[in-house]
Image (cartoon, rainbow, N blue to C red; front, top):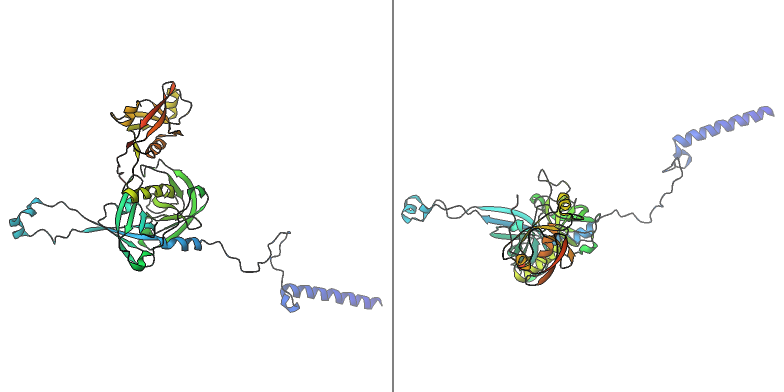
Length: 390
């Protein structure tokens, strides 16, 4: 009996060993597969979805905005200085007029955004600056001529209007304008344009910062900073949110090589809309002016003047006969507020004064020596000044 028991025990042991080896090396031989996703610790795993999962995509935003972004082609005649001898008919008879009479042209390339179904296109001023001829290429393949409605060099914005709208061409895909109040740092942003002339392109990034100024790009600066790739040819194109709404006009990049380094700047739609509506209504942009030269208050200046902080703008000069001069502002005054709104620095002062309507009388608050002075200034009209670009 004992012998039978030993034989049985050995048989079971060998059988279990064979079963273990087979189930490990050839699990299909025993009708079951190896465990999937096995872990050495207990983990919480999501259940298999009932339908295939949809990966994150911004195709709907792109589909919504792409038809509204156009390519802008410009040409400019090269105006060479004419030799006075060419005006002499005898000289021209023997030597000709020096050529075929048709001056050579230079070509430019940029982007723009259709903001109205009636054909208005918003772009950068530097895209169309000096252009003699402007052509708009739509995403559906149509090429249409356009005219310059007006421009604002100080904010680097321009408004064009397509002039060949007939019949079915009247239906233009105008973009939806976004709201700056809904935009925050970290939001997804898409940049759409025609970089390097390769064709319509969409790049993605986030809003890196808001209210960027003191960059020396434009006179009036309040840029959206984004790391969505912006390259030459993107200028004037659209910066849109994740819903495909226009939140900015791509304008400039910070780059040492000429290509994108992840620091791009766009004019916010709030500023662009204000400029655009003024240009469409009057052909130009009207801003306030009082005739002062301001200087930033440094820590050293604040200490020497006995100021509590560096906020405000130091009046370094006053133009004789200007609204500021008439209103009693003097060099050495520190401008603290305009129309009840605090002045942070000279750029902020410029923006606040420019936003005032010429002809209106506005309250100014200044610090003079050890006291605070209130003055009423009748706002003048600012003469547009063109900023030279490097």
